[in-house]
Structures are given as C-alpha cells and as structure tokens.
Amino acid sequence: MNKLKIWLKAIRAPFLTATIIPIVLGAVIGWAEINTFHWWYFALALIGGIFVHIGVNLSNDYFDHLSRDDWNNQTPTPFSGGSRVIQQGVIKPYQILLAALTSFTLGSLIGLYLNYVLPGNVILYIGIAGVFLGFFYTGFPLQIGYRGLGLGELATGLGFGPLMVVGSYYVQTGHLAIIPFLASVPVALLIALVLYINEFPDYEADKSVNKKTLPVVLGRERAAYLFYGLLLSTYLYTVILVILGLMPIFGLITLLTFPLAIKIIRVTMAHKDKPLELIPANASTIMVHLSFGACLIIAYVIDGWL
Image (cartoon, helix red, strand yellow):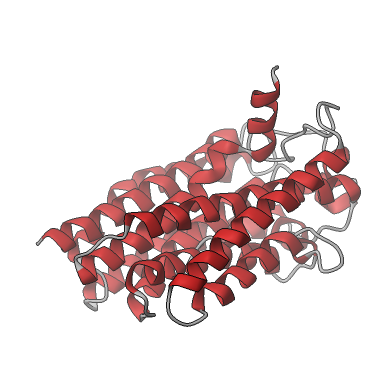
C-alpha cells in the first residue's frame, strides 16, 4: 500500500461526506434566501470544515490508541474500530497526532480568515466550538465520548449538524436565522446515528476501557430500541417542519430514503450483537445520511428556483 492510500485510510476519506452534506446544505439555504452564491467563501468553508473533520478522525485514532480501545477491538469492521493504521504499524502514533494538529490548525486559519472578512465574530465562536468538540471527543482530559449520558453522540450531532449548517449559512448571508438551524436537526440526528450504530461492533472493546457509549451504558438491546426511535423521529420531524411551513414542501422527497431506514432497522434487530452481520446496517446508515442530506439540498435548490 503506497503512502497516499495509507493516509487516505487514516483520515477515513469516505466519511468526509459528513462534512460535505451540512456545509452544502447551509450554503444552499443561504442562496435560496438571498439569491446570491459566494463561491469563494463556500469553497473556503468547505475546505476548512474538511480540515477540521480530518483532525477529528486522526485525533480519535491517536487517543483511542492511547486508551487501548482500538487495540482491544477484536472485531474491527470497515466502519468501526478506527482506521487501524496505528495497529497495523504503517503510521506511527506521533505522526497521527502531528497530522491531526496540523489539520486543526489549517482549518482554524481558514476560519479566522472568514471571520475577518465577515461581520461579527460568529464564525470565530462556531469554529472554536467545532474544534473543541472535535479534539476533546476523545482527547485528554475531557474525553467527551467516554463520559456517557449520550454526550459523545450529542457532540457528534452538534458538530456535524447545527455548527456546520448554520456556519455555512452565515458565510453566505452574513447573518443568523432559525431556518438553517431547524434544517440542520435531521442531518445532525443522522450523523449521530452513524456514530451510534458503529458503536455496536465496538461494544466489547469500548466496555473494556470504560468508554461509556450508549450501547455500553444501555446494553445492546435497549440501545437498539433507542436507535430505532431516533431514526424514525428524523422523518417525523421533517414532515412536521413541512406541515408547519418551516421547510419547503419539497423536503418531503427525503421520504424516498425511508425504505432504506426500514432495512437498517430490520438488520439491526437481527444482528445487533454480530459485528460482521451488522455491516450492511452500518453502510446503510451512512447512505441514509448521504441520500437524506442530498434530498434536503435538492429541496432547497428547487425552492430557491421557484
């Protein structure tokens, strides 16, 4: 494996859609409102967000290495257990940490530039919150993802939901509004659920290092029922927003992804304690986030054209 492929594996490049979807969504909502699209600001916001996301992924690998969580994981899958580059000995831990800090720094510098050219300090505050949540999700001393009470899942949803959608909207419009925040909630729920379902295969390893994810705290059976409820509530929430006139009626095209959500529930019901058999549900949850987010983006594009 060449160095480029190794580093693409380390940064978990396919998961960067978790950043692309909310930033595009926020920008499109802003465009639909002001009928102007600032391509340069959008590009900077997207690149900055991706750098921060890369920093999150790399720092998670580093700190889960230090806690022995990833080392204790005997059932890693393509969607859980970290990138495994440290465990495979292809990248040294200090290199992962250095790359993480570099990525956070580059993302922060872009954020500081955007904060300089835009009114107020909204981007500064959003950026600080995003980097804070990303680094301390597994970073010492806070280790938010280890604390329980759903804090890790909440931090993930907040970071890749409201912070990115509202931040991207602000970059386009220069002001805050409630609509992008409301639109960010289903995206936040779905990315939190991507993390959530990936915690099921990690159950034994997380339990061994006292990482209090929801499956560890609740047990896999009860955690699965909470997962189903949150997944279904994403669709219910979207329908309610449309009914209340707080989301374009075209937002209902997100219901096209509902059959895939049902498939996820069926697979999880049958295989919640079987890491390899759960892989289709892990993959499908990522696909629901991607396709639901894409449908939501399309809904606001159509609304902006009409």
